Image (tube, rainbow, N blue to C red; front, side, top):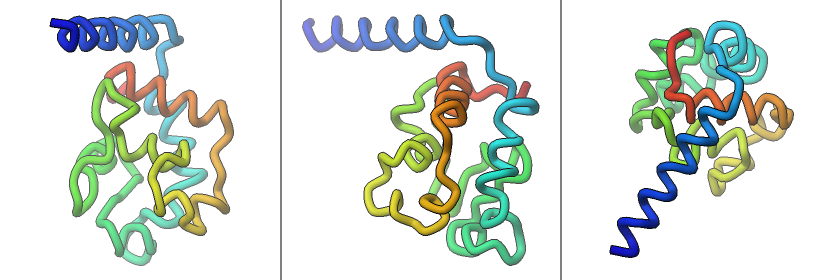
Length: 124
């Protein structure tokens, strides 16, 4: 019973925080971040990130398709999204990748990515 109540409270907090944020647009807020910080390595055919993971970041569809290893975005849950783990430095050894360090994300960019995922990662 207590575990169920904790799950319900956690879900309610997620919904409230997603609703309290301004709507984040993929087209105007997120794609420019990906273009500026990620696309240099995640564009086929030669981007090292693309070659190693199969992850393309040049469109909404390619981002949502994920990598060779699975999805990188968990709609509505930035805590479990690999994308958010990477940009927030919560991805274990992967946070030390030279490209992640070189193209550090600002707090505003991290917040936009987090809010967009928590708001359902819509194509908007």
